[in-house]
Length: 193
Image (cartoon, rainbow, N blue to C red; front, side, top):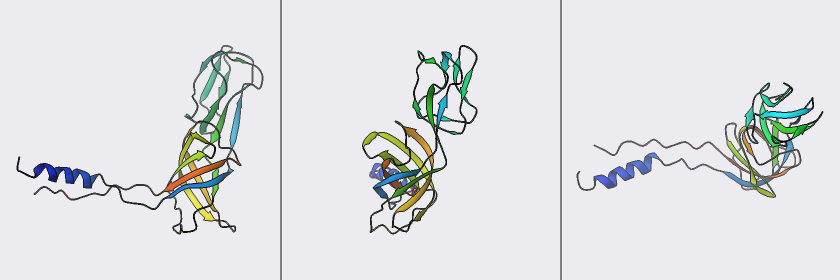
């Protein structure tokens, strides 16, 4: 190996892994203005044989979520995320026992008060990370579908959620949001001769 070859290789790896700096709307306070939840109910009574979901799991419409010993099932009514699991294997189901809550992927909308110095519009495709104002253990992420400024100067953002962990995001929930363009890796030319 030639003298100085190791630093050149290290510099090449460093350049190829750099990310393009991007403007970020960070830790903006806001509120959920639109979300759609479904309470998943048992329609029969009996013991649970098997549970097929966990909180935060994405489920598709028609997926079996709970199977009872009497061959009855609870199925997902829409595509979405299981926000809360409200039963365990020892729960005895009665008519209308709520087994879980399900958050639809769309529609989901939040209203943010961005910093006054922030001038770049939030564009479709931007990444979003959310937390509840009072609960840092809650986390959600998604992608921006569109945004607009309302008449009072707040930023209204439409999202499609990708993940959800730690509970619900019902209308009126106070949140913190971090919005940023997708990170794009910089491709560098090889430093080798």
